[in-house]
Length: 358
Image (cartoon, rainbow, N blue to C red; front, side, top):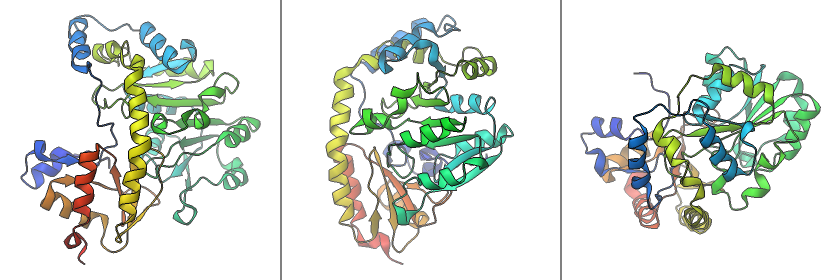
């Protein structure tokens, strides 16, 4: 099998070390640990709808997303996860495409598989992995489209990128923004570019139910843009019925779970600060500030691979070796923020000095 370099490789690790996958505490995948109260009921309801084809036009699904986001349904294209939207988009855009690393590897992979030239940009740790708007401005003639993850994975930081949006519009270039983690951000409305969709046809935003709603297996994502010609091209390439009845049915409920949504936002606002403070006290780490539900950490002595193996073998805890993100080296790891009890367990294990012996 080809290793695509993503996290959440629980089954592979369990098989390799002869462990029961059910015994593993997975901090490698950045998923909301809390579930919607009636989730199983909604999924069972989807079984009855699975005897028929889903609506090929996704009419109700798009309406549900419209109500959740506050934008028009004709600007929305649903997908089998955010990843399908990325791959559809790469069939339609004009290259070269600039990608700001370190970031999610599927941006570049989807581009190259569709013969779109990729122009790499890099964030730097000496600048806390913040986007350099001046560099984008100085290199504006090197690309026709720019892909930004905001907040970025794996660095966790969110930025106000409105000036970059204006810059690209003034040069008739496309800005693609992955806002998959934006709902975790404390002041989401300040940073999301959703408010500019109508007035900026050079903008397309990608979102998903995967992370915030804790539903990676359901595979529900969506793109939003007022660029009607681009949407039309994406729908031309889109395969029929890629969104199953379970995802379609869940959209009737999950976006209306206001109590769950608010609880999640408040939880991460508080728990994120607590976890960061606890991690900062561990002398073997340099912990980078985050605005979302995961933390990037630089190890001062041993490698990410060493710590990952030691934690897994000794404590059945799985973390993300982040060394395969472009722009990061062998000393970077990423950990998810989970429930307080799970976070405390991880922190207690990370205080084991034996893990860091050279």
